[in-house]
Amino acid sequence: MNVPETAGNGPLIDRRYVLGLLLRLCINTAGGVGILAVILYLALSRPLPGDYAGVFHALRNLSPFLRPILAVSVLVYALLACGSTSALCVYILHKVVGPLYRMERILDEYRSGAITRTVSFRNGDQIQPLAQAFNQWIGALRHDRQRWLATLKDTERYCLQDEATRRSNMEGALRNLFEDMSRYH
Amino acid sequence: MRNLSLPQPRPKIRFVSPRFQGPAVLAFTIIIATGGAVFWKLVDSRFQGVFRSTAIRGHYAFDSAYDIVRDLLAWHLAGLFVGVFLAGSILVLLIVAVTRHSVGKAVDSLRASADGDLSTPTGTCLLGEFDRFGEKIDAARADTLASILKIRGEAAALAAGGISAEEFHLRWDELKQRIREIAP
Image (tube, rainbow over all chains, first blue to last red; front, side, top):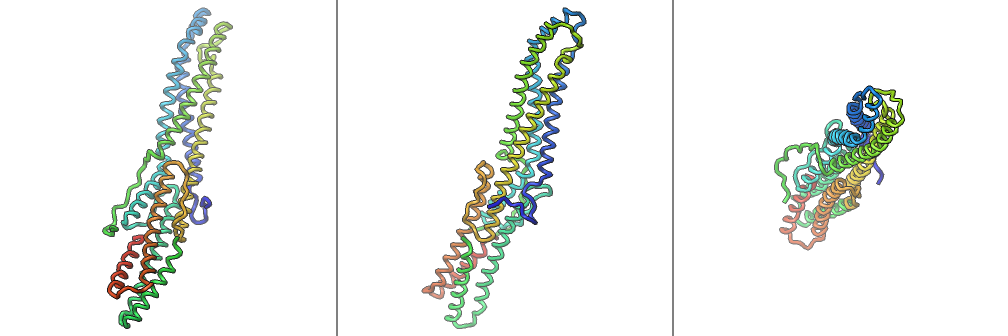
């Protein structure tokens, strides 16, 4: 089985969707790093004392405070970046998750025997060929079902014939039905 | 007994699926947290050394501590950006590849079903969500195949003869009803 990107069905996942996702990730990451830069700038840009001894002591005393400053800065960065990336992930991936969830529901309904509708996804949703393939399958099944029923009903039209002939016709139709169904395996 | 009553309301599309988006969010969080931890570790050790050596060296031609570490900080921030973005991009491409592969298998499976193959397993990716989805497709196909085989067996039994006319007509009507229940 090859991964389908066949003509007429379009790709499973649009290239523009992937590029958009990467672009948003880039902007998100840049934003996070920018916020970290601003926090560190604000923490480290306080003017040093004017005299030589003051600067020396300020620099020497900066070391013990550096670790917590960095820790808090990185923590803020991580929280903001994780939050925004998670939101981005949920927002972008719902174009794949939504159709998958919908298909799951439809498959459950199909198995329960409920009437199956033609599946269609929203505009901009990915994995559109999945809906087309499902509709194609259900369409083929319905087409076969109609043909099988037509075969049986066609035989019933000979109701005015004698019982033996009628029975013989019906058994012939059943054999045809048996043969016709053999394509399913 | 299958339910052939009125059609159910059109199902809504859910936006959030913790089974699918959860692992992706977790993976992004791990990348960001790892990037932040590496950044913190590197910058901390480098800045400690730079401030110590600058204090000892003298010639304080700067206004703030930021002026001392500006270039170093810029390089580390650029490194953090590149590292997190590259790792995130690889993850995105991985998610896309897995989705393409797994959904592609599902599409192939449904197309094969339209041609009559209802028994070959879908064989989606072993990742939880896709594996479960493949199993649902296989279950739907298996149900359909079971119905068709049952009808086929009944047709063969009726065609074989040796049944009374009354029973034959009864089973004939039942057979038609079973056929009507395929893909309602």
